[in-house]
Image (cartoon, rainbow, N blue to C red; front, top):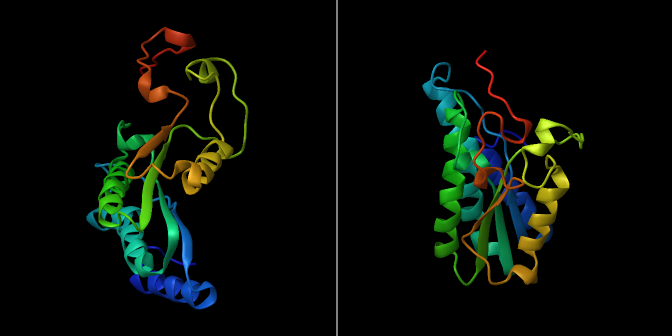
Length: 193
């Protein structure tokens, strides 16, 4: 497609999609904004992260709004970093927090026409590696997530089975954001390197 921070690319994408299909059923916004922290991230890099992570999903929703089919759905992929963080991730964390907030705002603005939800994945290993030991035990479900965990949630939220769900953020992280963990818990140890 091209650079999501480029307004012209977004407009061209929407024009081509509507010219070819005439409508849109589902819009899934899933982009990885730049991840840099306060010590290294420049103003331009931070602005770029927000352009990719928040502005592009907003603008695509705006451009596609008149073309959604009845029962249309927008799914925004956020991150569990919208509610917790690690040092030096400000650009990514801000973008993911922004798309979570954008979700409920769009749900209200597009009410009756489009349902809008977001998903906040936790640790998802895109190579489908199976972890053992502390990495698995620290997860309340006993494993690290994989892309199918997210894909299945997207399919559900796009289905009529989720017809009464809008403006919500579904955190899919194996329960990690609900579990307090301290040194020595579940095989996990703190290392002060």
